[in-house]
Image (cartoon, rainbow over all chains, first blue to last red; front, side, top):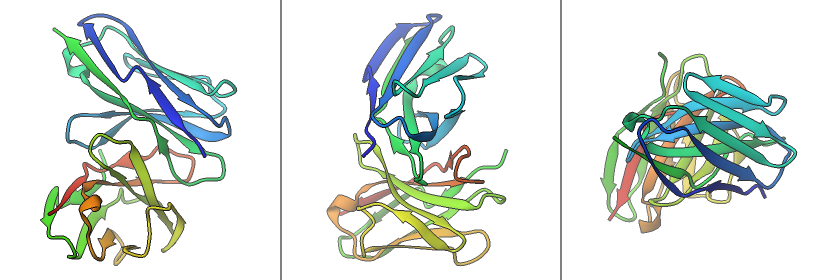
Length: 112
Length: 113
C-alpha cells in the first residue's frame, strides 16, 4: 500500500526566505503527484500537478520537482510571504488506481 | 473560475441519525470523489464515482455509506446511521479524467454527538 510522508511536520521561517518542503512516497508506480494548500478549517486548494513523466512544474513563486524513481518530490517556495502560512499537502495517484494518497502535511508559518 | 461547491458547511447530528452531504462538481468533470479528514489526521479516500457507478472504494466505505448522482449536477454522500467516529471534515472532489488535476470543495464539517 502506498505510504506518503512529509517532512518537516512544521516549519517557521521569516518573511522573504526561500524554503523547501519535502514529500516521499513508498511506491514509485504513480500516475501523478499533486501539491495542495489547506488553510485552517478550510478545503484543499490545488497548487501544482506533476505527471509521472515530468521532472518539475512551476507556478509563480512555486516550483515542484518529482524524482519518481527515488519516491520524492519537493515544493520550493521563493520569497515567502505571511500569506503563504498554511498547511501544505502532497498526494500521489498510484498507477491503476483512481484515488489520491495524502501525506500528513507540513504546517508552514511565515513570520512578518 | 469553476469550483466544487459543498453544502452544508457544517452539520451537527445525533448518533444513529442519517445525514446527506451534498456536492456540485465542476460541470464538465466526469469523475467524482469523496474523501474525509478526521481532525489531526491525513485526508483519506472514501469512494470514486464514474459513469453513474462506483469505480473504486476504500475499506472505510462500508455498508453505512452510499453515493448517488440524483441529477445532472449534484453528487451526494449518505451516511445511514452515524457513529461518533464519523465526525470529520468530508471533502468532495472532481476531475475531468483519471490522470488530471483534482479540484476539491471547501468541505462539510460533520459533528456526531
